[in-house]
Length: 223
Figure 1 (cartoon, one colour):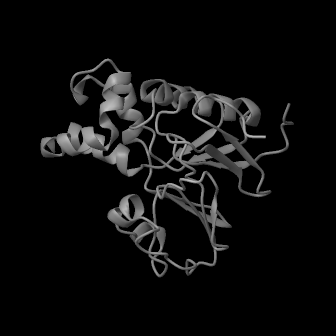
Figure 2 (cartoon, one colour):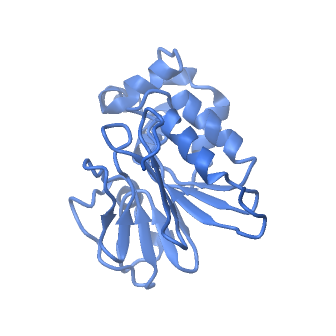
């Protein structure tokens, strides 16, 4: 068991409804009340159990300090629920079909209000004394509070490598799926979206020590 004095900051990459992977990773991390878990976004779409994933995260928030970031997939669902119905077709082909299936739902409005409230409570970015955390990307010359939402949630690292943030802090990001299942390490930035919904892993990283925990979508822990 983790002792009460060993408070940790742990980042977790894009989950995409991969509940089995999330359950395995949390089982080995054993989050404690004084730990901070920073989730990098994209809880819904593409994976098999989006409903179970969000329910697990709601329960997790009662165990530790949970900081969930809003991903572009999460934002799209909220936009549709907020009235932007023209996005529905794109969302369904973007992975929203698996989200609806996990809720046995016909339309997004069937998603339970408690789960919608969780997504509405997600933040755009997070910052500590040593790191910045965003879902997708950032503009190196701007503080987090002034970053455009499109950049934070939608801009791939394949489109633009941002360079080191002016604060000197290192960045932890998701969104740009690493199909080989390996972390992208640029020194000043690490991308820990290691394609769990595909043939990769869900990655969790201890921010202070660099220790990793990874599991695949079937829930198998990576040796």
